[in-house]
Amino acid sequence: MTHSEFLADWNDNRPYVEAHTSGSTGKPKDIRLLKTDMLVSARATNAFFGINSSSFLFCPLSLDYIAGKMMAVRAYAAKCEVVFAPPSNKIVLPDRPIDLLPVVPSQLKALIADRSALMQVKNLLIGGAAPAAEDCQALASMGVRAWIGYGMTETCSHVALASAADAERIYHAMPGISFTKTGDKHLIVNAPLFSFRTVATNDVVELLDDRSFRWRGRADNVINSGGIKLFAEELEKLYAPALGALPYYVTSAPDPKWGAAVVLVVESTPDTLPLIRQAIENIVADHRRRPKHYRAVAVLPRTPNGKLRRE
Image 1: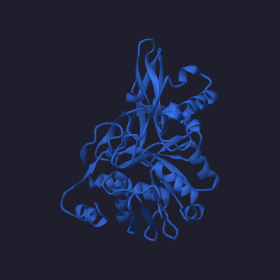
Image 2: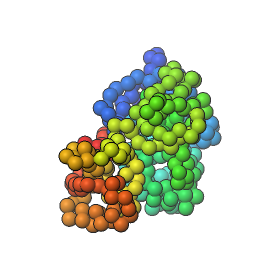
Image 3: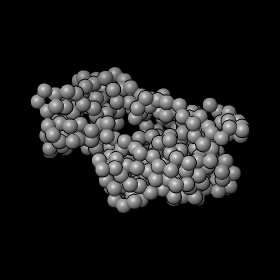
């Protein structure tokens, strides 16, 4: 979808915009988002980042998904300029100040390498998946004002933001949003300004108060190994220093002794696995949190917009 095609959809007489979920946390599906809800979200983001009619937005994300669509709506709401570039892991930034640049984690490495261009970005918004700690540290050391979004297509993009410089990665609610949780610690998003009012998520969190939380992982990615509940996303963060730039994810496999065993799947060749195993054993003291199995695959499965997909 092009920007002009999106604007044609936005300006027609339908009260909604059709969108696609990415499929990273379940089966991809088509949904309808009310334009009024998208405007509520866009205005909150514009207020947070100080976006106004003189701002310039740059978007290297697809307009087929919520991240791209919301950049178009933010520009529409602020009556400011937005430029869309073809999605790529090697972003070429325009030579001018950028008030808001949304990216996914796979685009960070090339951005960080191009320090002079990145210095023109006033606000970097990271979405789609959790970025690597080393990338966040690099951004912080460069003085880049970077934020990690928590949200989903159903909530019209992010409902909370965490500073990339915050090692604790505590998410704080956007204006008008609050949080509660179910008895089993699943996050509930309360959004009275939106038509949907509340969204019950499948995310397990540590709720700090009604406007902030630490995210632990998705409930369907919990690995019960020998009676110990391990979150795939927490293990991925733990293993990150041993994997470097290699794409990877954590999953599980049935185990006759433990019930389930942790499996590390790496986009690499089999000959690298002994080195990876040794590196993880050097940094993870608790053997219960180490992978029981290591797998190398030539290419990891990804969603259409580039997110890794556990299989």
